[in-house]
Length: 93
Image (cartoon, rainbow, N blue to C red):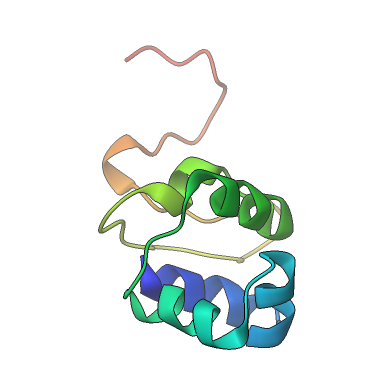
């Protein structure tokens, strides 16, 4: 998780103090989130999902590898390769 927070922040060109302010945290408290000492709570995940334009569930998942982020016209993170599907939402399971 902590690698994802760092990757998202840097790819959006935010400084730690900017993201900390969005979460109403001190820089030190935000550092603890990025370092993995503390986990995001659902409210923090919601705020960050709005900031980064991603689903909150991606921020709350444990050990989610990021395969691809911010490439091309239809930029988005592909964080769970096993469940990734490129196409309509009506795809069969």
